[in-house]
Length: 115
Image (cartoon, rainbow, N blue to C red):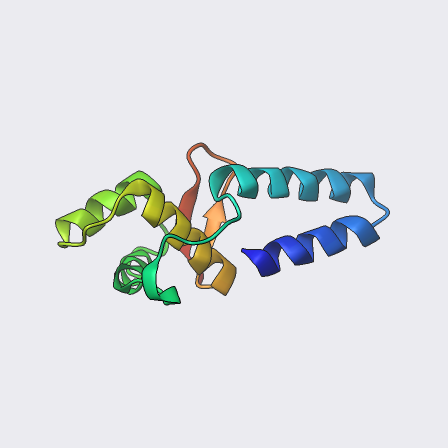
């Protein structure tokens, strides 16, 4: 999420609107709380194979957002050995790549396919 953070910080620093600055500060806080910056636990530096499966699952249900818990459960049913933490990080990587959108106005956040 480095690019997301860098872009959000740049907008935060250049905008004059206190409302916009407050929104961006809140988003950065949520992003840091939900998916802290730091090295990924993924080995090999590539995307795990389950991300493709999760993306296909979300694209098949474009009008239904899914929580990390629901995605983890579905992936486990499909035979993937994943936990909530790995899925959470992977989903935020898909958000950063523009394949998935996140709704953080609900708790826990929900992920859905980008139309």
